[in-house]
Image 1 (cartoon, rainbow, N blue to C red):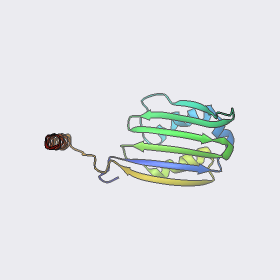
Image 2 (cartoon, one colour; image 1 turned 90 degrees about the vertical axis):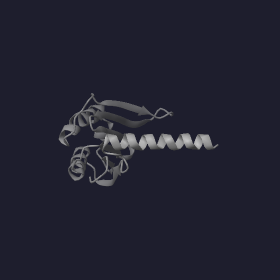
Image 3 (tube, rainbow, N blue to C red; image 1 turned 135 degrees about the vertical axis):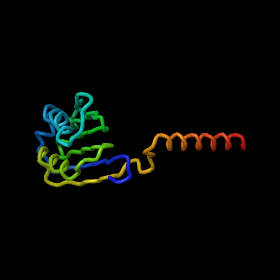
Image 4 (tube, helix red, strand yellow; image 1 turned 30 degrees about the vertical axis):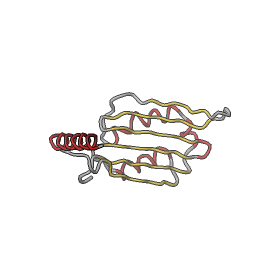
Length: 147
């Protein structure tokens, strides 16, 4: 992870098991178990909601769980066999192991992954953060006086 604040793993899965994508129970269980599988700490129970399209057709499920390290979210699209899953964590985690577990659970046939380093400029030291904030405020005051 280097000097970044955290990792953001984004997976889009194609060719998934439509029954799993349609199951509120399955998505809830995934969100309830998965944080522990990757060494994270849940701070709330998962929340899963069914999305209905305006024309009355089902469009899928969205689920979210807050973890001490940030969050895990799931969006399913059963009619197209697709799922989108995000994991953002300020704690380092094995993105390959997380991806393998997601692929296994959702029975994904093809995966598209993006991994972002988040908070590259985020100061690690609170004194540095205070100094930067103070300097930024002083600059804003100078700009306001100069206008």
